[in-house]
Image (spheres, rainbow, N blue to C red):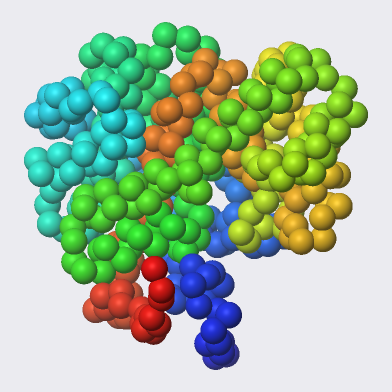
Length: 385
């Protein structure tokens, strides 16, 4: 492999390490023009598969239904239920905090009772138990009552949907949750939550503490909470323009917001220079299943009209929708109109890819020695306060 040289100049400092290669990602990559790949397969080739198949693919690099996959699926099923003490302690957590705060506490509780101090074993256990853990956190925080036992034979996300006691859920919710889950498993090695989780693991923190740190990173509005902000933006547009606005009215509203320097949520991406393929899949699903829902009609109009306005600004390198532009509206239409839980759904998914990457960096990288502790250099500069 040819050396990749970067000159470290002052203008490269304090830029969030954006664009600097620091290692290898063993599971996925993001191409600016083609979107997200899991290993060597674009999402369009695998997003229709079952979650267990995609998780197996991320973890082992193969998609099949042979003996190896059957054994893997059985392991997921056998480990699906959390220790009853874990669920008991989740139901004793205060409800006043944001659900992500409860989720990070729940991961630590899971580690206290079920941690093996073995990255490979803890990775498998965590992935298997995440649906039960997250369902319990949401049901408790929302006041929806007790959480039923997992039904892993129904499927990884079908079991989660069965456990989730959302009163408004539609028949399509299980399918939407499965799509959301698969599309968010992984996104390269350098997104904030993944990088933070791996950095904490580099200090030899266990899997549960490392994933807890990753989920704290995910919770911020610049990362996992973005889908909540996008949904509020879409609702605001519906409130301002009504349920059946014209394309011209939507375009003018976006243009007015740009003129007034207001944020346009759901557009742009750090790497992509095309419409996020994950957003494309959500748009197609919404158009097929919820064509008359006001939120779906609005996101489709924004998809069409937003880039027209944003392309007029030469400083905008990616004027196209990202996955957050559509996901919250689809979840709402499917009967989960509770945006405070959408970041948990993101975490339920993304923890899978992060855990698998942690196993690589701790157990397989550098011929099994693992990566050293993360320790970037900072240059002293006096700053007047």
